Amino acid sequence: MLRIITIIAFRYSKKKTNNTISKAIVVAGGGPYPGNKLWDSTRMAANFAYRVLRYQGISKKNILYFSEDNIDLDNNGKADDIAGIPTSDNIRTAISSWDGNANTLILYLTDHGKEKTFHLSESETLSADHLNLWLSQYQSGNPNKRVIVIYDACMSGSFVPALSANNRIIVTSTEADEDAYFISQGSLSFSDAFWSDIFNGNHVGKSFDSAKQAVAEFQNPMIEIGSNISGEVPIGNGISYNRELPLIETVSCTISGNRITCTATAGGKDGIARVWAVIMPSDYDIGTLSRPVVELPSFELMPDNDDDNKYTGMYQNYLVRNIRITIYAEDRNGNTSVPSLTYLSGLNVSEDKAVIAAGNPDIFGKNIQQAEDALKFQRYADGNIMKAATVEELHLKLADCASSDTHDVLIYLVGKGSPGSFRISNTESLSATTLNLWLNDLQEKISGKVVVVYDADYSGMFIPLLKPPQGKRADTDFRHFG
Image 1: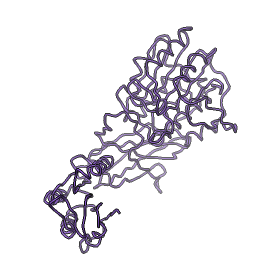
Image 2: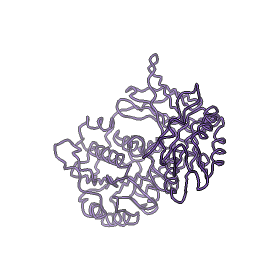
Image 3: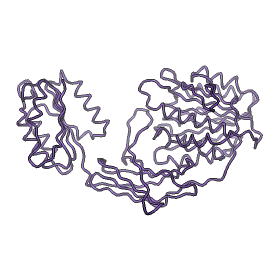
Image 4: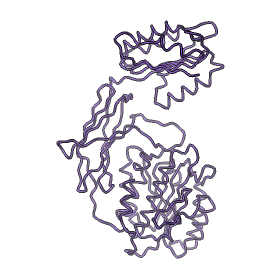
């Protein structure tokens, strides 16, 4: 939000500093459909791009903004900034028949993407080939017309081969097989870094270089510059003002147990408004599905009382052994520093583990799968999610958890129950008294807590029977349902 407030504080420029007549199309794809966690980041990025284009002298009538978010961007009291919703027909018409006397067309797209596909909405997509066809038709009447495409989405680099042509610059936020990052509602993203540099008057090539450096830890942006066009072309008037990015001077991070502590020194001529850290496992892999990354663990570094340039912060209960920590600083004008990266190896980091027991997997299989999915989403390692089908197996699994590398243990029991007893199979039952003895032994050997989730008839009767050992704090949590 800070960056947008900064832009509103400036008047939109009308002064012409070059002979370019530019028109722009901004597409905020996706929309606010249920489950689209990227929408807030999409609309923030697209709104930012729109305001930068206006600030750089492109008039309101020369920008077509397609979005399902019909808002008043220029504070004139009217919701007249959005040209329509993003559809194939609207985009095709905007490219082919709207441009008039413009000699440069700027196209910015952001939202979900897959291989050679951009999501316009929940139900409609745009292919790289169709977009290339429309751009080729646009340029066919006058081959000297320039096209600048900026595309920020997962797998956006897959558009480069199809769109590359003379008098075109194609900028993508990732390579063909990479995911895009939109952390903190897009404030840490390729789009934010790129449009910040355009806002500050830099040309496309330099803005790309700055944005590439800003997200180098997460993704690999691409740029393809065709013949008869230079990467030094500005967007709009290319109005610049003197600015100096904040600088992270030193970084020191340590791991103690499951606690990460980072200290950084940072400064800049416009002061420092914020310093923060983003954590990523060194072998991070979000899988084969194309989906943007909108959340990573992060924490704030707070200013030191005695040293204005020193900032310190801590993150508790992080359970991954080898990690990358990226430190950022932001000044009071919303400019973000070049990130500073450090690696940590926590050889003594303990891990959370879980044991699942279902009384009848044929009946309660869905419950088991939901539990596994939830645990994996919370970054439990596959090897730390164990299943037990008998009383003996459950005892052995809990014994396996009783080791120095275990932090918390979650026990999930689901099935049929009777007063003081859980039926773990058709032939065996587990008494609350026996389970309590196992839990007492487990708690003596692990550094964290034991959490029991029990879903069965009479489950509430287990509560008084699962008390922690004498002298131990009551860190055995119990949940019962029904």
